[in-house]
Length: 358
Image (cartoon, rainbow, N blue to C red):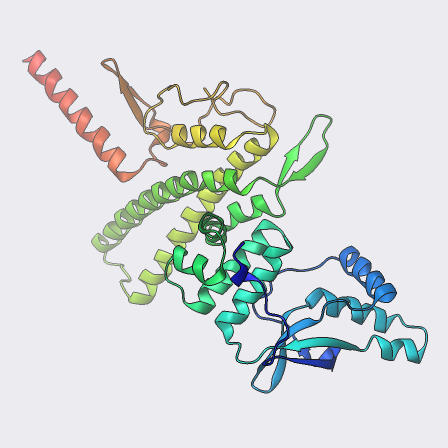
């Protein structure tokens, strides 16, 4: 990691202060939540050895705000609140802090993210969200600009930001993970690697866009029927509510199907290559077996490990070697362009039949 990413140390511009625990405000850029075991272990270390590293703080409108040191403060609070003597309580009632001057929101967010990443502290999702908060606080417009400001590798920042901006169903697969059934009826939660989860993103987008197009077409058809019956409410408020409903329904549809693929990926230990192959297969209008498809990827698997008779995304049609196959059940999930292409193909076929009959 570049040396400019290291949090600052005391110098002529910084002050070392002893402050009461309760005067320190939380950082708005800290998303890490420490469990009781971690705080308990840290408290025991502080009890035996003292506070080895001060918390880092800044001043905001005359108030003191943490940049780093949330776990250290929590540990000291635990020691203070469980103290058996007044002397012991006073010993743990204050915390040594390094006050950094001139730290704006952008720099504070960057320092919070950098410290957690240097310590490899927090789940991948928590780290991703901190990087995203640093990006937003600094109003960085591109991934390279964000990486440069944080002093972090470009590829790592790109992965973090893709995860931070991903739909909830993908973020949950990283942390806390997906529930997987095992033989004997037991269930366990498994967290998927970030790379595998991000490889599923095109599948989610395909499902959402396809469903959104279908719902918009259905809404438009209903609107035209209502217009003919003279009972149309075309106010901006009604249109906005309808648009929000359609978007929410499309997202819910995509999330449900995507979670199914994520569960399968966790249960069958799919590699990133496996996931990518299945996503490519599921988002194509035709079933095409290629050398890219890994062994066993011919059909989606259900949670028992057996071939699933229904494809994850219902296909509308395929045409190979002069044979046209149509799946009527795929109409609801097909993209508008795919439906138009099939309609054109069927019209051409009917015209050919008419010419032959004539």
